[in-house]
Amino acid sequence: MEKAEGRNQTPIMEFILLGFGNVPEMQPLLFLVFLVIYIVTVSGNILIIALVMTDQHLHTPMYFFLGNLSCLEAFYTSTILPRLLTGLLTGERTISVKGCIAQLYFFGILSATECLLLTAMSYDRYLAICNPLRYAALMNARVCFQLVAGSWISSFLGCTIVNIFLFQSTFCDSKEIDHFFCDFSPMIKLSCGHNQTLQLVTFTIAAIGTFVPFLLTLTSYICIITTILRIPSATGRQKTFSTCSSHLIVVTVFYGTLIIVYVVPTANTPKVLQKIFPVFYAVLTPMINPIIYSLRNKEVKKALQKAVNTFVFSQDLR
Image (cartoon, rainbow, N blue to C red; front, side):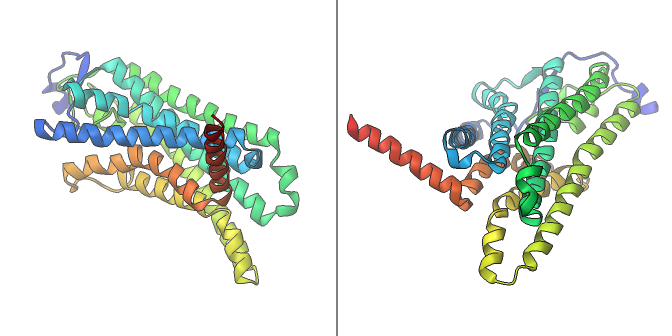
């Protein structure tokens, strides 16, 4: 209470995103690096979407989820990098309070939806490997649509509840957010007055939206690995594992970076690392996912090779 009373209570209307520091000679290099990452991320995910839509061999539940995941990650990156690139290019670091809350809102929806989509994909692999005889009946088009729609709707509702409380908050004392995008923890530190209700609601929804999907995904893969180990031949085990290895790598990278950023205590972590870790989670993960699926998935590689051959053939006809 004393701390709140000692703060400047004048409400502020905009924040200053400090980003990666005020080193002019580093700005062009950072701009180039993040521009390349953004182009590769969006191009890679759009390529996956195009392959899933055009290749008949990829019209299966697994690739339906993959196409939705790629679509999500193209938007996911676009909530952060365009604003960051603009700041690096022009030096303009201010963002309105409403704009910051809006960025956090869309970032939260997309993050929560990714958790649920990865869980749906792990459930798909669980049925395919542990219950193959009933897979076609249990994972039909209607179920796939319901899982994807449920992921989006539940994430939208959860983040909307948080934002209703966040929009009622006022911010004072300092305008500076020591981050490269509007994340919840740096923003809430600048909130005036009591915010225990907001923090409790956010913690509850975040725990349900991330911890529960994580447990379901972990349970699915425990069952999958147990089933694979029961396969007598090494060739059979390898072939079966290859159908879910790409997704397992993506899940490991996603939750690994998520835990490092939001679960591991950061009190003794240098500020530089507190900014670098979110780069892996919010920027690099959406970029490497299409690469993982392209390099480790035979069906995607065949579809990509077929698309390239078709393009080359059409060019030769000209």
